[in-house]
Image (cartoon, rainbow, N blue to C red; front, top):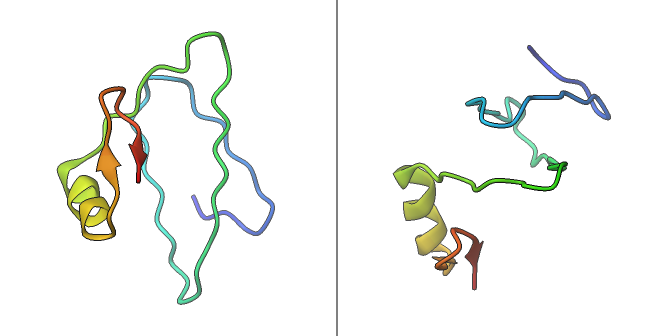
Length: 66
């Protein structure tokens, strides 16, 4: 599925999904996790490697940050 600016997609919790920017320009994606238990992000190792290269770290709660 290809989204256009301001399009929205809803994906149930615990369903594996991926997104890719097919444009040459930077893109922004906003994610809203609802409910009383947002769960936890399971980061692929490739994402963690790239994040570490930019100075981000994975904390004890599974969040990426400085």
